[in-house]
Length: 187
Image (cartoon, rainbow, N blue to C red; front, side, top):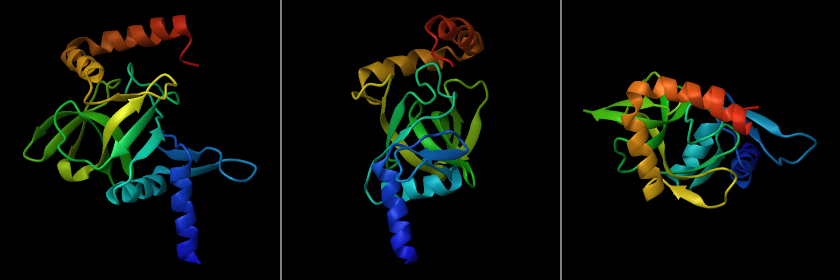
């Protein structure tokens, strides 16, 4: 019985899109009158287990830490096993037990890793052993076309954005207070 319930829950996670909000996950289109919420500490181990078995997982992104290129509840990430990661790559890491982030690798030295979200001003730290998934690409702005992280578009974004770190604070402020108000993306 327990195995059957766990199998049902496992399938539920991969039959629907998921939200990344740093705390709980809402499973869209779940059977019944309302959707279900799962805490990340329960959600991600199931996702990671499936990835380790050779599957990929698509999750809806939650949070503003990857702005300006990725938006909360608008964009999705396609995850796979973490292999061959290098500086500049986005990665899903467990920086503390049960605390997961999807951020860009800023530095790797002797197995120690510095991560930073594109929309963040401070860094987070982990080891390469804390990597749980790598990102193949993102579905941005409601598109069904994958923007691959090994594609030219993502590489150009990354090259410029990583070099603009000294003035990132001002660029993010302009994006938040001017750009989003003009185009009403931030509701």
